[in-house]
Length: 137
Image 1: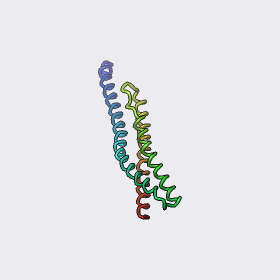
Image 2: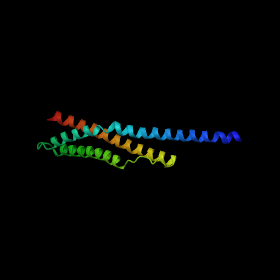
Image 3: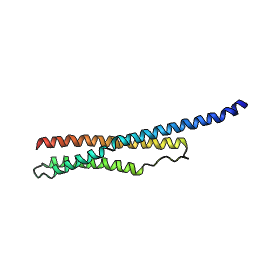
Image 4: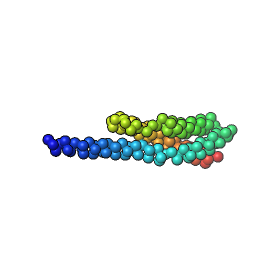
């Protein structure tokens, strides 16, 4: 019985350290996703500017103008999604329960993954449309 009381503090310390490692790992994953796609905002803005310039062409058909405006809107939404995520992201409180912190970080991971997917797909689609429009001119 005495041995149990002697081992209990070590078990608690190990458990706390393990939980903190899990929190740190998940937080690092969330930040890594952000850091991976954040530089893409410059690419998105560049493609958007080029598409806007092409959209000013008075010889475009209504279909072409519609495609351009839709793609510009998608690129704008992607950038706004990143800005919104960054504005709303909060570091987990140090005194929060482990389960609450993990849930919050998993939710944030889902949100930033959705932002990443939106940014990458809108950028890819924007680049493809830009290429098509430039070849048509």
